[in-house]
Image (cartoon, rainbow, N blue to C red; front, side):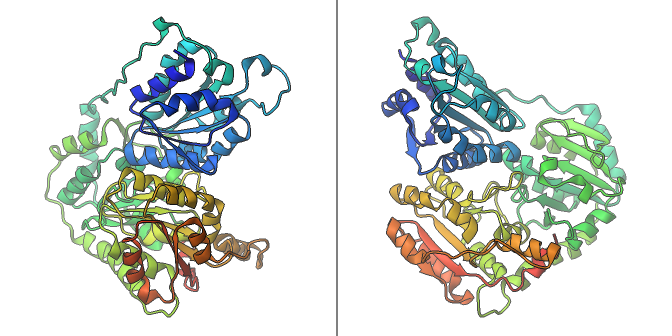
Length: 540
């Protein structure tokens, strides 16, 4: 058996369904091994897209997504997507080719030290320098990538190793073992229950860990049973159903008075699956006066503004279930009424406001009305992200994909492609600005080739709107933020997709419903009116 064959067998052993990538000369043996495997190779048009797709696969399934690139520029093109997975906690395994080991000790064509480059954006990485260690390295890669807190791992396969024969005694598979996390410490649970009982104004802060580990149903039951308001981070949206009477909004904008006031009055923060990269605690605990209960799969990061009274390191769902039995249920919910009303009324008011040209709230309102709870919205980075993060209600776990820790532009289209691959029965919409969409528009061809009916809602304003606003706020002027765009309708048609230009806000829902009935990708170009952006920018 050839080493590349063994590597593919190990990937099959891990249950890998897809590999996203771009082939290269140094990965030819691996590509040949994949050709006869049960793994589906999805060729994309840029390696960055391959990494974004593996990132989204990891988020949506909890299993490590796999991306593949050759050496040199192929490998470095993966970096942005791998870094995105690193800061946003998505399990991912990146595999790169490399030059023959006999020439990496000297200056050589396309050779750079990829292992060293990837070390800062991966939980673990290594070069496969002997075919006999492939089963161990692959098993370790997936184990590390999928362990809490999940993230990316990188394996480098030199071309001469890939072509080497492996002795039969080294070809045994190592069975994947999914360890169960230990039960919560009972003493810590009792202390947490006592803090909650004595609290007069507790808040639950739900982070990405709630979404990642599907603790949403248990969280809703717990919050409603004890009438505790829940605020999510951007990546925690969906951690509690937006229709729950306890869901009062999203944390992530510095001057959001509604959320800031809630935290100012709180005397206890019950932090569930929250990571500091999601939103700095100095923004919600500036005076260091909040008692904090940290409940997560990993210990808390050290931060002056985040010093928990108690840390419960265990499964979030089991922790909440056990806490339920330790708390009394005679909580008043009067305080929730006004908080909930403000959250709901703002969305309704802004989403239904009359306007001749389409504005972000009207578009988001329309998307929410058209999509079912289980349908998926993938959002790019820019002004559209801020609007979606603040105003878009998420009603089901893991149906809102956003880049927050690394905040990578160009992620929405690749994420939508993967979402539709995994869930062909669901509607999938990508929301992007013209800046972010144009960064990876080449992979519209991938969506067309795969015959995936995704819909791209494209905000077109011929510029980097968010950067323009920030520049004008800081300097009174802006520079280098404007550009021209192609005819997006004709561009879509040239790929084999459908292009539509929205004429008015009123017709958006009709256009979107029609787009979702097609059998090919659809771009809905929205000549966006950002005249009410001050509403969102004032919160930054």
